[in-house]
Image 1 (cartoon, rainbow, N blue to C red):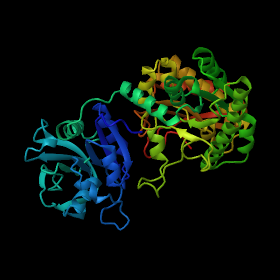
Image 2: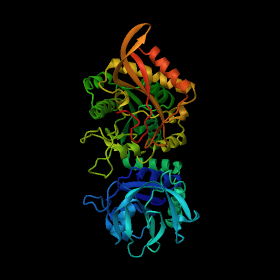
Image 3: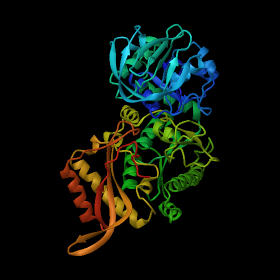
Image 4: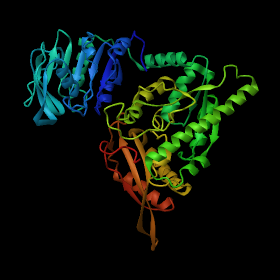
Length: 529
């Protein structure tokens, strides 16, 4: 989603770095809009977007590989300030006449940067600073017109610049927390070099998003899949602000919801917010389709495809209802709104379309058939989860909705490893309810990113009341994160863990063992499937 030309903007060309999204976040923290685009965007499209500056991200490739992602070289001639980071710097050096070679001394992790020549990038920072590296190649000869702006023990050209053309390069990563003063470097680029204004706030985003939605849908009708989660709730509030009664929310009970979810959603949005809401109980159909399915990607595809099929049937019913009551003058429901977020989009990118590696498909972006009968409306596609929460508060949603923990689109299907059955769903719901209630009682629920139970396809021997048992295992997953891109397991008090475990084993029939997941993301994902 683009902003109007009046706003300052930094364009980020994505070459596949796992930190591309972090660059975007750091720029947005400066209250400047940042937008991630494909690495091979044509120079003509860059001109149309009118950015104040361009960032070339890092990436996993080597610039001298025959299959290395390349940018349109005409971009270098646009006169727009540019910052290359890691691979982006190497690509810049190669295109502009420098030399890049494999380094026998790979730099990974912490390092010390020594600043020289009074570069604008390092204004107010000092002569040396701690940095974080992640590269195996390095620039060994500068392009004409460039000079070294900083060096490390292993690299004479850890930072390079051509102040005349306003093209800059950094071999290290200023966007990560391990470069403590990296945010100041980014601020120098954004404000001192690109001359951006601090004109992107959540209020301005909401106004822009509403305007774009109105222009996209005109007087047509929009349907939204409302799950009760943060993303769809914020999208519902945003669309209601933008187009009012043109929006109808459809709540699909796919049989994979949390305990009492259908009751809560209908009460909050139907009764309290007075949003037009259609409830569809399709639980039997979803569970029938999932019989015997154990592969997680297959589960996601089945759920995504059936989700759209249910929507198509429900919108036909809505159209019939509209025609019956005389409100069908603008025709059918042409648009489907979704709460797709940036991390969803990035993790779902295919190798053919982007140099980043595929991690998993997402319900909102990976499981939809190509020949959909809807056009997508995705007003928060460029936001991270914490930004969506800010938007929700700005739109007047209650804290209980805004700060509810994320829940995957495929629901409990991806928290049950192996086949999804009504019996296994019942076990997981009961265990998950205990996790949530204990986290809330101990005042930990809102302090973490996610806390939930996972049902494993593992049975083990236990003893209950002098009787041998052979029953299921539940894993507890509790993580802290800012945006879901990285996460670490939470060091909960032992007393709380013990209480959760004791209650699950005592109260959930069929479970005799509870484990705590102490893996971080990366290398693990937050959800188990």
